[in-house]
Image 1 (cartoon, rainbow, N blue to C red):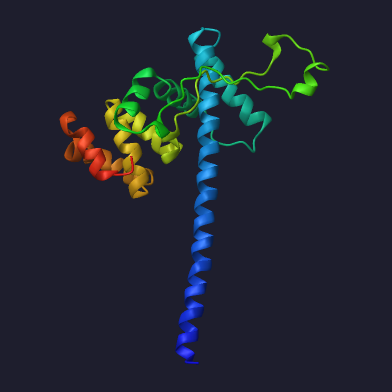
Image 2: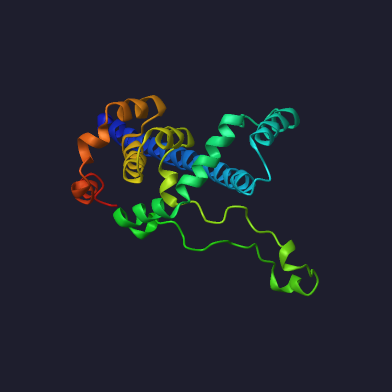
Length: 218
């Protein structure tokens, strides 16, 4: 058999192995990113609830940040500013207006679930043994689930989008664009500064057509 043919076959097989590695590394990165977003979502929801009820003030948020740093120095990323960014992340993306924007332009896969809360349930065989009042059962802090579209980019990018974009259409565009172009923070900043949204999809009349052309699977 031709040696070059063998080498070609081996190279193709090696390429398949590399593709497997890249594929699973990508899935691992996506899983890590999702958990970071969910953490920010639930922490943001918890703190938001405390602030809105006026049970907490800005001073308490500062104390929370200092407490996390002193008690768990291994946990990074919870400065006072970061915690407020998580509150913004939850408040803005859990709003009905953002959900309505996603529902208007994208398919149901990305729409925020309508359920208000999801309670953890016990196996039926435990119910007769473990009896506890309904109020004592575990209920996740966030009153709504995190919209799936948020998984398309990182928390750092979301913070940039939330702070610098003027409306929900623009925010949704940059979430999709950051995902499609694999943008890191600095690249995203440059796109926003260059008004990429305005250049490509600035007219609301062209929004649906523009998104369909750019994201045919959406």
